[in-house]
Image (cartoon, rainbow, N blue to C red; front, side, top):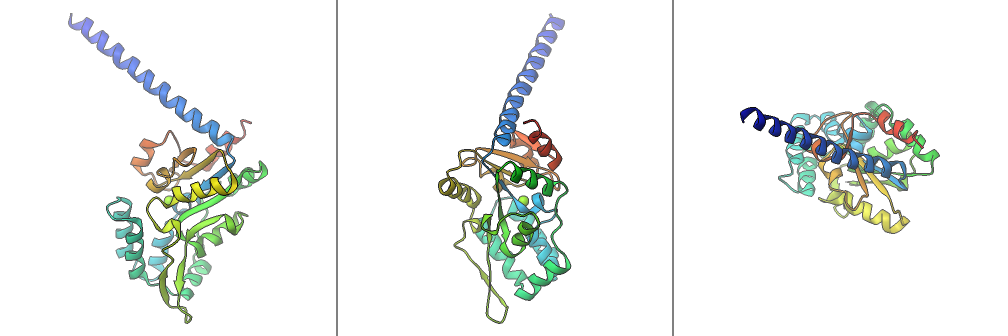
Length: 250
Ligand SMILES: [Mg+2]
């Protein structure tokens, strides 16, 4: 009896395993299909298109790296609103316009390998590419121009400066300044351009939360793996090469 029980338990487990694999395969395949046929692709920037977190780099450059990195880590846990987390960190950094410009010249953001080729390939196929970031427009625009992405395809937060260049806060009215902001940008894009199939790619929880309204989400773990995002992604990749390979299928 024992051995029979064991066999049936094993076969149940085995069948369960196959079923789970089949189901996840179906959803991964569906996400891949949506990606191959996308009208538009929205890319997160920090730790996705570029290797680092822009706000942490800015903080390091302004000499308050440790305090801010700690706060970024807490902010990603989701215990405080996105807007409050941003404003708390910026009130410590208090960067001047000159410091931001110097950061971009001295430590330009590092593109993740393969992202340039991916954007090029998408453009060749007439897919619209957008950068949707909780980071800062002045830095993200620099990234966009390296990737030949038009600046009106950039959605990010705006730092404000006084006439003398001192820090004056950030534009709180931007959708990306609030929790759920990336989803709001995607809804706006669908309405404005009439996209039927829009795919979001990113490493973080705010990227994952943008689907829906995004038609599909692809988790990106090429720079940092966030376990919760990985578990909830129907398709999780660790390099842009995997996405390029997918596009070669048609
Ligand atoms: Mg990110």
